[in-house]
Image (cartoon, rainbow, N blue to C red; front, top):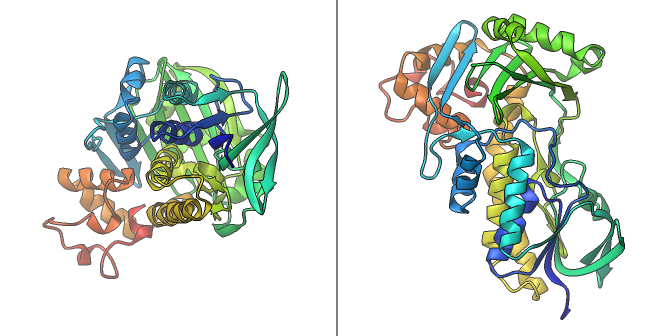
Length: 409
């Protein structure tokens, strides 16, 4: 086709805005749409691991995030079964710390950068249907306040979340998936001085996440099979979990101010959908979703945006080369995200094994191992790199040849 866009990106949160930004900087003509009004918040763990922060730095977005007043999360604490790990957050080039920005800030910064790169952006734009020609997706039809628009494109990018309408319209199947493992509830508080960290006990996982405006997000995770019970009185269960698993944090809550009501979900799906097809591709949660307990969603979305832009160096007017590039993207996505997916599932089962406690006790005695453990959690090191070059005999800690995903996560 001679007219239209090189790409229409449906969904302007992290995955979509980042994808639009990178495609535009590569010279593509891009339209970005979202049904929500911007800027606006959305339910999120907020946390960006260091590899995601490094991407924001690479793309020139991190300075604006720092200017927004988002606090640097440069220390970590982790308590489980009487074991406490604490230390500085790992760093990598471009990522001096982790960050947890409000989504109304982060998403808008990425949209602004995309628009500056030449992207046309329309919010309050509700996708109605996809346009097809000769067996390919060739555009979108969406409704705005001024009426229905039809836009043609060589590629439609579905970045519209776990309940992706694009994925439904192309009938993208789940190619691998697992049952829901946990449910989660969040509250927001001011007046806390907790820093970033997490607390674990059998059946509970508590996270404290400082963000903008002196707000600290407190999240509590429960087994999925308790969701029907928890949802009857979520605030009571939320506080009871904090009191039982993180009593020091609970004491601070009694003296703090709750400024955001409790929200939560039991719909924490775990899957890899088919990532691409003729004229379409899925990025972010639209193509891959995992339990939020490991807070990998934002980082995964930024990495996927980078993967797609790196593969789309071909002329999008050539459907054969375009489809081959989309296939390469999907393979990279699956290769990069399978290990964190599996480790997240283990964590979301909310069990505390004796082997993991033995390992953590040994790690807690070594600042170097503690730092390396936090780097594994951040996705900066692989699990098999945890004990590299350490004077530690891991055969003494485990019943097999070393740590596996169950032990580390």
